[in-house]
Amino acid sequence: MLPCLFLTRPEADSARFARAARYAGWRGEVLIAPLMRIALTPPPAARLESARTLVATSQHAIAALAAASPRRDWPIWCVGPRTAEAARSAGFDIVHEGGGDAQALRAALLEAALAEPVLHLRGTHAAMDVAAELRAAGVATESCRVYEQIAQPLSDAGQARLKQGGDLVIPVFSPRSAQLVVAALREAAAPEARQHVLAISKAALSAAQGVNWASARVAERPDATAMLAALTLVQAALEPSEKPR
Image (tube, rainbow, N blue to C red; front, top):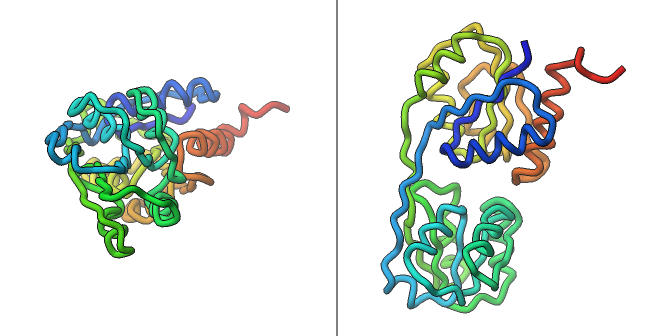
C-alpha cells in the first residue's frame, strides 16, 4: 500500500498543497481532513488609516486587508513568499518578504528603516507577538486580529482513514496546527496507522510531541517549496521498491 498524504490545514490551503504534491511526484493517496477553518474579520478603516507600514504573517491577513480597504499604497512586510505573492496579487506594489517564519521576519523588520506607526495584521493564534517584539525595540507598533483560526473536529473520513492503517504522512505548518494534529490523533486512537510527521520548522515539530511518530522530518526552510522537497524524501524512504534501479 502506498503512503497516504494526510492534510489537515484549512480546505483551500490543503487543496493547494495537494496539487503541488502531485506535481512534485506524490503517487499515493491524498486525504484532506481540515482541523481548522478560517474566518476573516476585516479591520476597521480607522485602524488602517493611521498606519504607515503594515506587517502580515499570513495570506489570510492579506485577504482581510483587501476586503477592508481599496488602498494599496502601504509598504507591506510579509512573513514569506506565499503571503508576499498574495499581497502582490491583491494589488500591493511595495512588498517585502521576511524570510519565511516569525523569527526571520522579526530580524528583517528590526534591520529595516520602517515608517511608523507599524500595524501587524495577524490571526487569533500566532507563533510570535511581532508587535510586542517591535515595541520592545522602540518601534511604534500595534497589532490587529483580522482572522480567526477556528478548530474543528477530525472528519469521519479522516477518522476512517486513520483506522485503515498503513503509512500516513502528516505535514504540520505551524505550532498551532501541530497541536491540533496531536489532539486529533490521540482522540482517534488508531494503533494500526504508522504516522510520519513533516514539520515546517523546529517549533512546529516541538509542538507535535505526544504522538509516537514512526518518523519525523523538518523542512530545510520554513516554506512550501522546502516542505515539498522534504515530502519527496519521505516518499522515497517509504517506497524503496518504487525507486529506479
